[in-house]
Structures are given as structure tokens and as C-alpha cells.
Image (cartoon, rainbow, N blue to C red):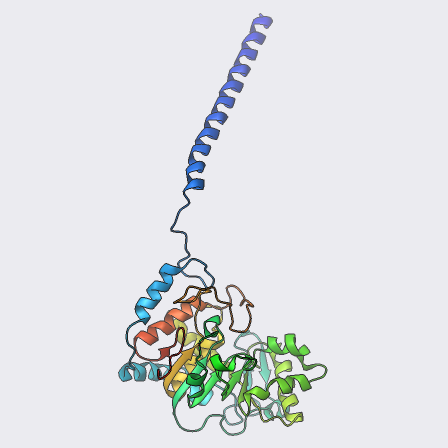
Length: 358
């Protein structure tokens, strides 16, 4: 009896093992049959819908060019409407920068990048604030906001940029060594991210002459620093101020007003732009729209291929250093700027600048 049960049990185990092996073999064949055709015929529709770095985004670029290619003409009503919205919400002319008038001693500054951190303005800090107002009480006729995108390389846009009445540049870009032809040299306002001061000039903790000499290409321009966006920005920004003062530089340092940056972030959020932080480019474009009758943008392009030649572009016209992922929403920002271009609010320049164009 026991022998018969043992035989039955062994027979059952062999059957189960054979079924398991057969099932595994069948799944193996099915998997191979499904995978092999994909290897020999890869899917073609694999381009990202929106990416700041895409090597196969012809379809997306063609959509941009379709919106961009029409003859551009300023639409005064659209411009005035958008400018009024900006001014009402953000008050850029009065509040974009900190001055001794709008930020007296005793003011509690709230860091726009870290709302839990505050700073009480004392006499020493107050002495670094701009006396009077950095911008004249007038509207400039033409302003050029120059981004640093690789699309500016070999663009021949230098003369057109320099023809603007007021030129804004971002994050201390190089203007010499052959770049003049493509990006121009005129500068009325240039921004500086404190990270540049830390990485290139050792946070100005040692010798500082190299920093001062590096600013000579910007002549007598304003140097705009986000000293009160994050607490760690404040000491190095103040050292930049004291350095320029000590070396009697013609460069005039000014500080972003964190209250303005907060208002501007809320404004663009109301326009549908979702981002961790606004880029310097869209901040300066926003300010220019309050200060200028005609705003033209150069070097703004979120893809790493050229819109016309489809040649690979570097991230900046002077290097290929990448921005921090998920920090700025560059493609989304560009879409908003392109929308303003199609509305006739501002003019985007993509590709080469032709003689006689404006």
C-alpha cells in the first residue's frame, strides 16, 4: 500500500515538473516572438513632447517655426494690456530693485527663495542700497534682453543688439574673443548669479582684482545681484558690493527686491507657468516689458538643435554647461515668450540676424 502511494506521489511530481518546464518554454517563445520584431523595427514616434535637451525634436521645432514664421508686427493694444497687468501685479519700476527709498532701516526682508528666513535691515546693510533710483523716470524706446543660448553662436546679431537703447545681459557672459560680432558689446544692465562669484572668484574671500577686471567689458553698467533670494547669497553679494567700492569700479551694484521676485513668480503662475524658480531670462524680460516700449529677445531657445539648420547647439553660446534639471522650466518659459511674440507684445529673434532687419 505504501509502495503504491509512493509511486503515485512520484508520478504526480514528475507531471507537475514537466508542465512547469513546458509552460516556461512557451513563455520564453512568446517573449522572443514579441521582442524580436521590436528590435528590427524600432518605433519612430519616440521624440519627447517637451524637453530642453532633445536630439530628435524636428516635429516640435516645426510647430514652433509654424507659429514664428509669420511676419511680425507689434500689436500696441496687446502690448499695453500685458504691460498694464505686469505693472499692476508687480510694480517693477518702483519695486524690482532695493533702494534706500523703498527699503528703509528696520525693514524686515523676507527671502523669496526661503520664506522662513528673514533679515532685519541695519545701517550697514542700508548703506549698500542704491541711492535714488537705478532707472530714469522715462520709458526706453527699444530694449534688448540677451539670453546666453547656443543659438546666438554665429548669429551675427551683435550690431542689432548694440543698436538698442538699453541692453540687458544675464549672468556675466563673455563679450570678447570673437563673440562681439554675434552678441554685441553694449551693456546697460548685467545680472550675476552668486554661484558664479563662488565658482569663478572663490566667493571673493581672497584676491579680488580678477573679479573687478572681469567686469571691464560691461563698462559703466548696473550689476544686478539676487542678494536676498537665499540667505547664503547675502554675504557674497555684499562682498561683491564692497569689492567694487574698494576698487572704485565704474560698475554700479544693485540688489533684486525679494518682494518683487515673489510677486513676479505669482504673476507667471497665474499665466499658467509652473516652475520651481523663474529663470533670469524671463525675469529680465518681464522687467523690460515694464521699462521699454519695444522689447526684443536674443539667445532664447530651449532645444539643443538649431531651428533652421538642425545642427547641434551647445547649451550656451560660450560653453556647454547644463542648467540644473527640474530647477527652471525652460521649454515652458519659451512657450510663454513665443505666445507673447505671436501676440505682438515682444519680438523673439531666432537664428541669424540679417542686415537692415529690426
